[in-house]
Image (cartoon, rainbow over the protein chains, first blue to last red):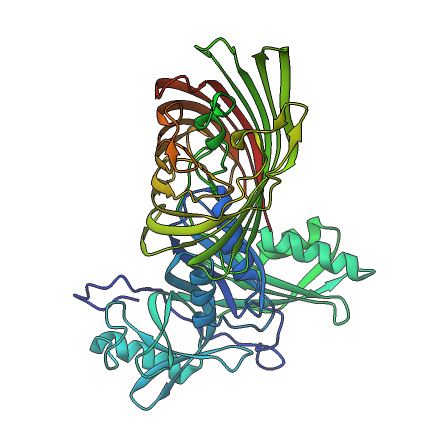
Length: 258
Length: 297
C-alpha cells in the first residue's frame, strides 16, 4: 500500500480479511516468521563460512543455516513457533569474526497498537514488533497520515498480514521492524480424502509448498485437512485442488477468501 | 670451526608460518572464530648445496610441521607449531664422504595473534594483526656421532628460548587476497652458540581462477598463488665470535596452488631462490617444496 507522495518503498496490496472456518488460524504449523536472513560483511572465502555457519546454528531456535557467499547473506530456518533473537544472531556473527548488518525477516500476524505505536503481533507466538517506515527506525512513531489510516483499518478488521523488513532493537530496548513491504495473506482450507498414512500427508505437503504462489502449507492426516497460505493477489482454489488431485487424493475447499 | 659452516637460512625457512585460510608460505590476519580449532599439516622438502668449499656439502631436510590454531576469542588466536624433522648433511672429510644428521621432533613454537584493526564490507575484509610468541627448546640439541657432537644447525633443537614478533596485513575479496607480513626472530644463546637473528618480509597474492563466475551457495575456490619471501639473517656467533660463513639475504619467489572449501584446504608451493647473498661459504638453498592441508572444527 502506498501513500501518495511517499518516498518510501512500502508496497502494500489490498489486504483482505481472512475468514477462517472453525476459528483463528493462529495454530502452530503455518509459518509465523519466515525468510529470516542475516547480512554478513567481511565474508570472502569458503573456509571462513564455517565459523558463521557454526555460530548461527548454535543460536536457540535456529535449525538450519544456508550461506550464500556471493551476496554475503545467511538465510536461517527457524523451528516452529520460534521468533528470532536478533541480538543473539548479531552476536553470533561477531563471535565468528565478522560484522553483522541487517537482519531481515517476514512475519505473519495481525496489526495492533500499544500507546502511540503501531505493532505487529506475530501469529502463534508472544512476539510483537513495533512497526516503522524505513528510515525512521530509532525515532518516535511515524507513518504518513494516509498510510496510517489504512493500517488502522486493517488493525480494526484483524486482517492477516505479512510484513517484510529489517529488524532492530529500538533505542528503548523493544524489538522493531522497518517495514519494506506488506502483502496480502490468503489462507485456504481444504478437506482431503484418500490419504492412508502420515507419509501421504508429508508428500502432499511437499507438493503444495512447491505450487506457484504458495507460501506455506500444512497437511494434517488426522483431521484430513490441508491449510494453504498464499502470498499472491490472485487466488484460485481450483489450482490448489488440482495439485491435490494430481497427487492422487480428493479435495474440496472448505472456505474461500472473499 | 669448519664443521659449523652449515646452511642456516635454508633451515630457517622451514619454520612454519601459520595461516588460517590465505597464503601458503606466509601468515594471514584472517579470523579464527571464537572456539574454533584448525589443524594444519605440511610436508616440506629442502635441498641445499652449491658448496664452494672442498667439503662439497649437500643438505637434505624433510620437515613435517603440525600446527594447531585455537580461537580464544574472535580477535585473539593461539598457535602452536611442532615440526618433525629429518636432517641429513653429506660432507667430505679427511676420512672420506660421510653423512651426518638426526631425525625427530624439533623445537615447539607458541604464539598469539590479535586482530587489532578490522574493516568489513560486503564480500571484502581488511585486517591488521600483530603477533608475538616464543620458540621453546623442546628438540634435542646434543646429538653426536662418530665425528663428535653435531653442529648446532644440524641439531633438531636450538637449546635456546627465542622470542618472535611480527605484524600481518590481509586484504581479502571474493576474487583475490593479499597478505603481507613482517616478522623478527630474536635468537638467544645456548651452549656457546647463538644463531643469527632473522628478519622476514613476506608477501602473498592469491587469485581465484575457479569458479570464474561466482554463483549462489558456497562453492570450492581454486586459487593460483604467487608469494615472495625475503629473509635477512645476521651472522651466527660461536662463543661470542661472529661466524663469517653464516647469515645473509635470500629472496624466494614461490608459485603455488590452493583449493579451498568450507571445511578444508589443500595446497602446494615451490619456493625458488632468485637472490642469495650469503656470507662466506654458507650453503645456498636449491629449492623448497611444500604441500599441506588445513581442516577446521
